[in-house]
Structure formats: structure tokens, C-alpha cells
Image: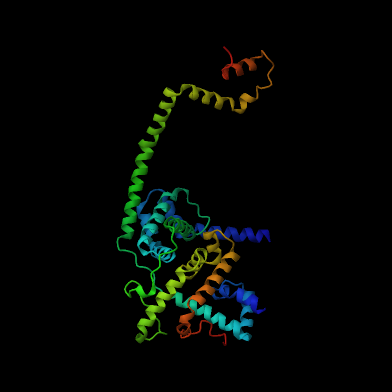
Length: 217
Length: 142
């Protein structure tokens, strides 16, 4: 059993060593700016989106993302591919976001639904929604954002990392520094909270197609 | 599988994080339990709904600005390594030597005495060569 576990660990380490970022990071460690540009180009979009959703502040999201990349640049020499590069990157981002939120002493800035403008908060476009329901869709989109922003910090990190960045529970556990079962519990509670917050919009939710068509309910 | 256990594991089911065996048991339960089946569909739809919110669009100059800032850091780090760090160490040593020679000297002796090979002479009989050597090194003899 131990041998199997160490074999799995070895295979995982090998996979991390073979990640394209591992090779690029050795170039970054030598001060290669072209390699650094590649890293930024590969990861800036999901990172900025994550930070904006997490802090609820679009304006500072790019500043924080920039700080994350510069920390990566400075720490490139000491980088060891013990985990996936993306996991390391998002760990730095999560810590910086937490610092930012605590420094501002504010839970994420939230705009009241009635103040939202369509340009700022794009409308959800789905086949399930007819074009005539544009206003309702905008309201729904804002409601989802509000529901996410109102989640407790740890639930919000976990659900965002899972939902938008497709991290596995194990990777999330490394980023937040908790056990995998705790991550599972956080995500479960986050979805329950979202369900409660979105309760007024449930009539729209049920217009969405079934996610599990093989379940006959 | 009972409903309580099933509801605890529903998110993991939606995220495809269950083991093959657990997933099989879960699907079996969901086929026969309308309440859990309904809950699974709702959580699944919430996940789908969240997915409709688009990614933020970064400003066009973001990548270039970040690379430029990294270039500044690299330049500073190069000059620091070449001149600033050695200069700081030199100035620190000169200041220590000129203004606090006693402390400087005592520090040097303490670090010498802490070497293992000196401690090896600790049991030397008084008057022997090793004892004299130790006394001279530690600054005890006048």
C-alpha cells in the first residue's frame, strides 16, 4: 500500500516536472523577460477574473494580479515544482486578496442591484432565456453576483476556484491549506447558501435544462 | 445510501469528485429518491447558471505593463547584486570596526571559541601545550 502511494506520488511529481510552466519558470529564474511574458499571457485572464470575483472590486483586480505576477518573477529562483504551477499562482493570489480585503476592512464592495448598469454587468445569455426577458436576465445576472459576493470568505474562495477555474478539491485544499473533506463541506455549504439567496429567481433556474438527464426527477 | 449522506455528498457528485463506487451508489439512490434527485438537479442548475457569468476582460496594456515592471525589478536586482550589496557590507564592517572595536573583537573571539576543535582541548592538563594554545587563542594570557 505504501509502495503504491509513493508510486502515485512519484508519478504526480513527474507530471508536475513535465508541466510546460516548469520549463518556462527555469527561464524566468534566469531573468528571461520573454518567458515571463509567456507566463503572464497564459494566466492573466483567469487570474484577473478570479480576483475581481473574489474581492468584488474590479478596479483593484488588475493591480493585485500584477503584484501576483511580480511576486512570481521575484520568487522564480526559489520555485520548486512541488505542486502545479497554477496552484502556486492562485495560492499567492488568494493570500494577496485576503490581505487586500483585510486592509480595506471591508467585505467585498457590493453594488445594489438597482444601481447596476447593463454595460458594467453583462447580461447572462442562454438559450433558455428569451431575448424579450433581457431585463429579467440582467437582474438574474446581478443576483448571482450578489449571491456569490455575500458568501463567507472561505466558502467564496472554494466555490470560485471550483466553479470558474476548475480546480479539483485536492488542489483547492492545497491553495487554502485545509483538508479535502473540509473543501467538500465548504463547497456544499456555499451551494446551499447560493440556493437560498437565489430562491426568488428559482422560477428562472427551473427553465434551465436538466443537468443530469438520466435522473428521472 | 440514505438521504442525509446523499445530500452531504451532492456537491461532490455535481463536481464529479466522487469515487466510481460512490458515484454508482449515488446514481442508484437518485433514481429512486425524488427529493434527492430534485436537489441534485437544482444544485447542477445553479452550477450551470454561475457558469454564464463571463470572464473579466483585462485592459489591453496589462501584459506589457507587467513585463515592464519586471524589467525594472531585474535591473535593480542586477545593480544591487553588483554594487549595492557589497557596498553595504563594506560600510557595515568599517563602521563596526571603527566605532565598536571591542564588540567587533569580542564577537570574533566568541565565534572562534565556538569551534569544535577548540573545545576538544577543554580537558587539557594545566601547563600543557594544548592548554597554553587555548589560553592564547581565547585571549586569556597576558
